[in-house]
Image (cartoon, rainbow over all chains, first blue to last red; front, side, top):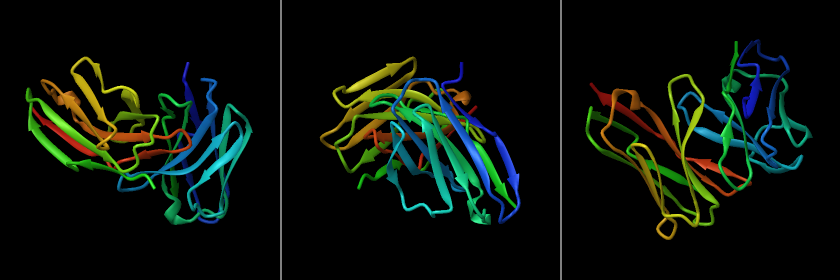
Length: 110
Length: 110
């Protein structure tokens, strides 16, 4: 069983579109995160949620809106996509211990 | 604000050599420090997790140490193999935030 799963794995879309990436964890963790890995491969935190509540928002444009319908899910919705949003987005979960990451979603905006 | 630095940024060594990757962090109030491996175009694979109360962890040819007081961790790889070639990332976990270094790109020469 995959601990943290993201869908889709690849996403190609045009500028201006709205898209969502889904994330689910089956570990029972309270904390979930979204990270962006840019072309230079640096992993930067975007959001963290604890038990469905937003804890951290790292100055991400408000075109990005995370939604946590329950503790096991943290979805990322992106409005009005821009070329600079092209990156790999990783979801993760942890609970004061080992962090587990999804396999990533490669978003390409054309 | 937590900052994580990894040195060197890139490293090439002949097969069979032992090597050390360095990681430093500015805020010692961490729950744990985790080392990951990332292969090109792939997700993150957790290698070792060191809790804040621990000094080191070992898994096979890998040994990671943690000195919270000085804000340093090292990843020691013994008897390196070409299959060890990857980017190695360290991450300081404070639960609400996991902060990554920029990684060390390791290339093992056959």
